[in-house]
Length: 176
Ligand SMILES: [Zn+2]
Image 1: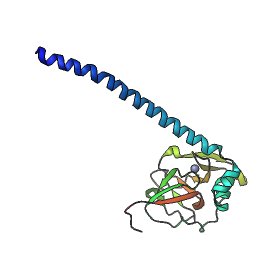
Image 2: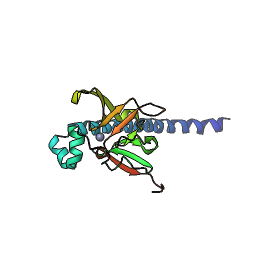
Image 3: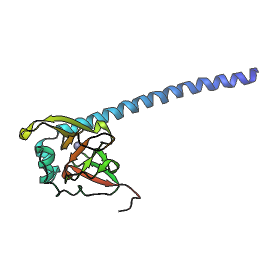
Image 4: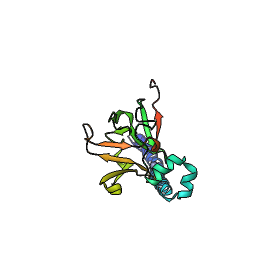
């Protein structure tokens, strides 16, 4: 018995510092990753209008930064049916999945739910004498469209968005 207990005690003394190191490395990695994502989020909000003008097309700039609206039935995604993900055209954050897209007949791409509730922010909009709920990208603050209460189940919501505020990323292995 003594012969077995001595090596196992030795093993424990060598393993413990290793475990501690691994623990500290994982804590540091976590802290670093969250610090990075915070910097990234802040950076998008700090981008000036002049910089956005360089990054976006004039139409994208008008919609995303000046809260413009494209004319109904003119955008590239209102009748778009491929499988994939719609991201913010400005900061590329993932916003909506084709699985939640539906035909609203409005002439704008319509979804009943964002992929992650945290990726969009809803703010009251009282422009043009109407009370509406504006939908903005949570990462860059870009204007995406509006949300209404006349959508289909399961949410009953209709996220009515501008094609020009979105970019489509096709799902791999999906047929056109
Ligand atoms: Zn964005």
